[in-house]
Length: 196
Image (tube, one colour):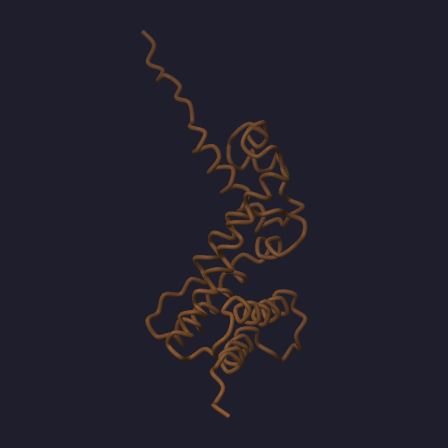
């Protein structure tokens, strides 16, 4: 009598999740160049064909990783503080925290080398627009098109994060301290103007 257990088949969803986890780990450890079909399959403990079956190859996997990155990014910038000033500041802090914790993925998200799901990427921006709109309703953010104001704020923090990740600011400048000053600068820039 055989005591061997019958072999169970791993579900497609489990394989896909394992490939995404493996791809993300490899991406952050070894960079984009380290993200090969074989490396991801080995890390996920599946056959290399799994990458093709689920993502149509390396480029599809990379696009899926970037799309998932935008999902996480939206959560990171989606501050929910009741105080509108805190919400704006913590949204900005979430932006930097995501970028610093995931520098390779963050860089790919804003590059032309990958194609994220456009609806998912747009949602991340919409989350910031909602933060701006919340501040407008509370009277701490100036009147105007909230999408336009969100784009200006995004541009400022994206620039600060980009300089920090590239290590191109002067050596005496601490990235975290500078970023806090940029957030204060953005808040002042978004504040309502006194009536003329």
